[in-house]
Amino acid sequence: MFHCNRRAPLTFLLILLCASGCSRPHEIGELTTLAHGKTDKGDIHGFTEIYDHLFFPLRSSATRVCEIGIAGGGSLQVWSRYFSKATVFGIDIYSLSQLRSMLRSQGVKEDFLPDQPETPRIKTFVADQANREQLKSFIDKYGGDFDIVLDDGGHTMEMQQVSLGFFFKYVKPAGYYVIEDVHTSLTDRYEGYGAQKGQENTTLRMINQFIRNARIESQYLRPEEAEYLNSRIEYCNLFVKNNSAHSITCIFKKKEETR
Image 1 (cartoon, rainbow, N blue to C red):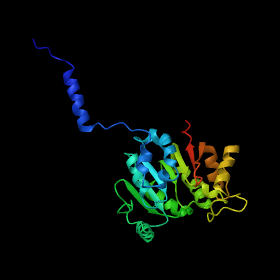
Image 2 (cartoon, one colour):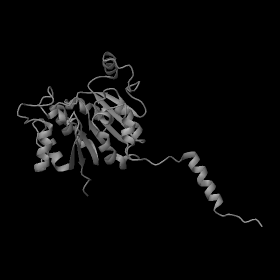
Image 3 (cartoon, helix red, strand yellow):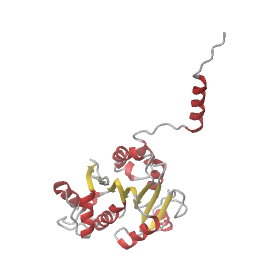
């Protein structure tokens, strides 16, 4: 006697759906894997281990990610793959052709730079991150409302602090602003990044003062920028890697909107 399995059609339908469109679930650790060989965030500094945990909940929802500092283009490629729905914006003081020429002069034969300044998923823009007018030109062209902004640019004290003051208002509520390579504040290890002898102007000192007093103070910030930061920062995490570079990154989270 033939018995009809009523669940068979449903099972068959699920198999068809998975064959045509299901993908394996995301896993913690994939960001570091993607970054390998493309950016020092993973291979040298170990920042991707931290980002993987913080940014994991945004993998399928983030739509706008901005990074200051393009270098060889590896980070832009990594973010576009990690955040599958995001448009990735890159800002650099040099054009793509200038960056490529610089890489060739350093003996780098292959890079991850986009072929054009604008592709469907990656947009690049030439600007000095310490120049608010040039940064405003970027915002005028592409808008704000970023899920994440990362500063991996020139790493000077002025650049890091001006960019934080300017860009934080363009981060979405509950979004993140990241200052990488804060270790350039350490004058006994790094020179040429504009840190004063007593370190009064360093980015690390600015962050430590916030940790102590919950107040951002900086000679590079306009009063309204400092006020905005102090009223909108929910928390900051300062991470130090025990390696030869003494790698430091700082992550600021923006408060949710109050109703």
